[in-house]
Each structure stands twice: as C-alpha cells, then as structure tokens.
Length: 347
Image 1 (tube, one colour):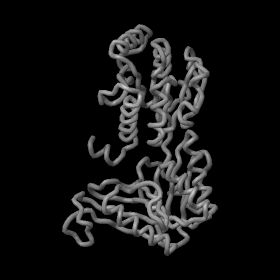
Image 2 (cartoon, one colour):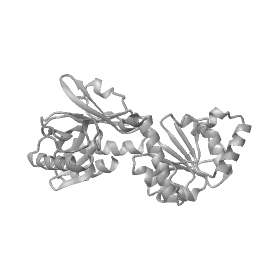
Image 3 (cartoon, rainbow, N blue to C red):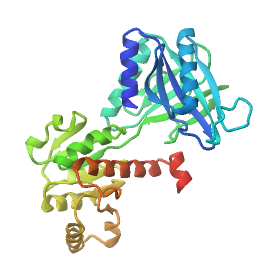
Image 4 (cartoon, helix red, strand yellow):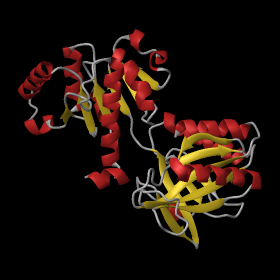
C-alpha cells in the first residue's frame, strides 16, 4: 500500500492525471475483496492490483477512460456465469469498484500521500476515506490519531469509524468508503543478524512497520535492513521500559545471537501486552528456555503466549526462507486479529 501512494505522489507531482481504482464492496467468492487498490494513468496500470483476471482488465480499461474524461465512476463486475452483465467467471461473487479521478498537480492529494507515508513511519493507524460519488468534487481524505482528519468536511460518523475491515457508511444522504490502510502496531525484532536482515524487507513489503533492537552498535545501521526499519541500541539485560511500551497491536520476533539474550528478551516480552511473541531456535534450545522461565516464576499459561519454533513450517533453512516463513505467520496472525474476510471464512 505504501508503494502505491508513493507512486501516486510521483505521478501527480509530475503533473500527470491518474485514477485510483478501489474495490469498495464485494459479495461471494472473489479474487480480492474490498480494500484492493490499483493506480492507473492514461498509459495503463501504474501500481497495485484489484485481483487480476478479466475484472481487473475491464477495470483498467474503464480507469483509462476515466483519466481521459477527467471523471469519477462506479462499476459493478459480476464474477458468475450465465447472468446478465456477467464476465463469465466461475469465482461466484461480484465486486463494486470506484474510480476516483485525480488531477495532476493536485496539492491536496499530494499532501494526502505525504501524510500516508508519514503514517507508515509512525505508530498509530491511518484511515483512507473516499466519498463514493461521480461528481467531480467528491471528498478524499485520510485520518489518524496523530494528525486528525485532512478534510473537515468529512462527517463525524465517518471519521469516528473504528472497524479494522473496509466498509461503506451512509451519512447525510451520501456514501463514504472507509478503510484502515495503515494498521496500528509494529514488529519488534530482537537481534540484527542474518535472519533479521532478510526478515525486515519481507515484512515491510507486506506493510508491517519494523523496529530492530540490538546491543551491538554495528548492527543498528538502518542500511543493513534496506532502510526499512527503525533501529535502537538497547541494553538487553533491562527491557522494562520497552515492555511497558508495547501494545496489543504489536508483534515480537526474538532471534538474538545467543541463549542469554534470547532469555532476557523473552523474560521481558512476556510481561508486555504484545499480541504475538515468536522465538527462533531448536526444540532443545526452546525446551531449556521454557524450563528456566518456569523456574523464574512464569506459569504454563504464560508460556502459551510463545510461538516456538517461530514461523510456519515450510522446512526452511536459509535466512531468506526463514524470513518467508515468519512473514507468512505474521500475515495470518494479523488477518485473524483484524477480522479479515478470508480469515473469517476459514475459521
């Protein structure tokens, strides 16, 4: 998502017109439901996807027409067979897609993109709001706890929405689409070694905000993580302050260079409110870790909060493979936690 809005800023700043294509509602089985976005210029798709296939092909064509016409539009694509206006797809559902025209050089939209980019570096959530209208003055805004709402004309009932899933809200005879495009919380990664250096870019590509914690200054260089993580030099023997800082929206991945630091990290993180605590290591190492934690007063119920070994089992061995495994697991945990459509369907 961050890449899409960065690309939007680049295109609009260059004075080129574009259309933001957004799936705002869906029913039944579809490749991508509400929350899918694509940016299109007169030359075609510039970033993002709404799921591919015939629906995206048609949407891209419609978006290019909207760019040339300088107009907003709404389309519904039926992904079922033998129905009127059907795309003859076997998916079994349908999607409502909104096309929001953005004029090149639009300062308000440039500011909106910049606010979204700042939100990805912050700690709080950021919400996108689109007025679903074909009029050329349809509202588009972002809202966050840190900076408030970018457009005071958005109705209070819309800005007050707290749902973690995209939805359409009726307000004052108008329809507004609202989506939490930057989720609250961060991934705190203990240890800046080989696995962390592969894990951060993988997580960042899936819109996780990362913080790497190390006690070795040479491993706190942001360049080691592709410039995609905040880095902190910490004393692993006293993480009391950090433990108090974490919220139920935060994730923890422990992969330090040794058993002592792993234990210290786990000890303090079990006192935090983090929603996920994953620990890398062999079953033997984890067994000894658990024994010591029990000796130090933690209960079996406390230890149920630990995910060990960390990641989904894909028989990974290399740092890159482990990074994929851990990222996949965090995607799953995040989806279940935030009530995603697909997570609910498989629960």
